[in-house]
Amino acid sequence: MAQTNLYPIRCPSCGAQQDETLYDSIDVGKEPDLRRQLLENKLNAVTCNACGNRFRIDKNLLYHDSREGWMIYLNPHSPENQDQAVSEFRDVLEDLNSVLPADQTLPEVDLVLSRIELVERIFVREAGLHPKVIEYVKYLIYTQNLDQFMPEDKAILLNGQECNEDQLCFVVQDVETHKLETLLHYKRETYNSLVELLIEDGDTSMVNQLFPGPYISARAYLMQDEV
Ligand SMILES: [Zn+2]
Image 1 (tube, rainbow, N blue to C red):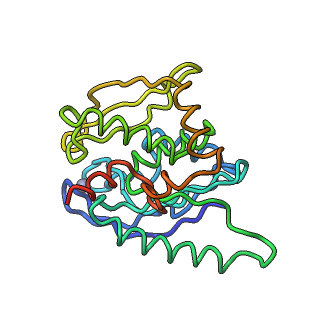
Image 2: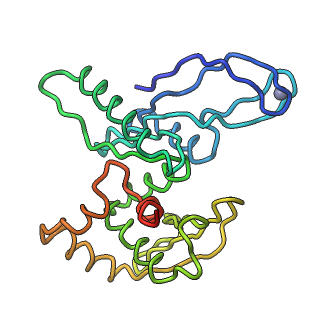
């Protein structure tokens, strides 16, 4: 079931304060409409009672698809602060485990650090794609095009709506302006060979070395690597 709490909110436009009920966790298996609201930017959106300004609150959110058996935890942080995000995430996992009946185990939980990463990961999970292989593809795109796509400046995201049977589609987003810039196509055949090579053969050491988790991100890995 979804969980909500009352939060004190300050309007970024006029500074007025009000209390607002916001979602801490949602189960889209039980309430599919919450998935739609999230994708349409309407979840945890607030309208200011004083000036009518409409804005979204970027807060932590546990996204659970109980039909498919996976969870994604959104913990808004910059990639530079991923250590803190990971440590908070471990506490959340502990809390989740502590309320589970003894005969149940927690489903797989992904960690993402931004709302756009959450939306992307929902598409990745719903399409049955492997997050680590998708990030590996991004790693290849970055490292082969460093003159065009510097990880500091550009985020590469899977564009779930433009993917088809033959091709995966990625979009390059400028980190500062949030503008979506270039569409990149990647052969699904090549992706499938990577899955065989990196996952199904059982030799996951290479992707696990790049992305030990729980936060799996080619961009964060490359930014860390450059220090
Ligand atoms: Zn206001």
